Image 1 (tube, helix red, strand yellow):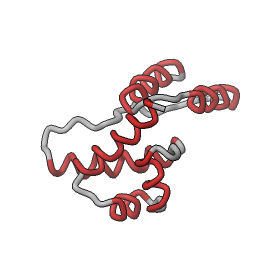
Image 2: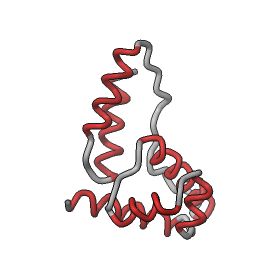
Image 3: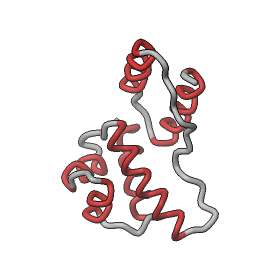
Image 4: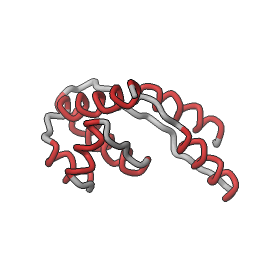
Amino acid sequence: MEKVNQFAQRLVEYRKAAGLKQKEAAELAGISVSSLCHWEKGISKPSTDDLEKLLAVYNEKIGRLHPGYVPVVVLPPLTISSTIEIGKFREDLKAFDGNLHDFIEYMTVLCRAYP
């Protein structure tokens, strides 16, 4: 449960660093306010797609507020040639259960595994 709370806490920290209220962040990311609220309280976790949308909003906003900011997630474009690899990638990603910093490290490893 502690990792979920760390993840939720990080989401709140990044939103606040971006200078956004929950409603603003949700609207910009194209997600529901209630979903964001649940993620920030540790009630549930976002899908990979929703997390990517949210982090893109935060990175863009924080980058404008703090020049020199390094984006939360810097991933190379992912090119996967076969459906078997895509399925394996999705399984690996669904198996992930950790905090945001672990997520970044884990995604880096996955991107190297599936060049």
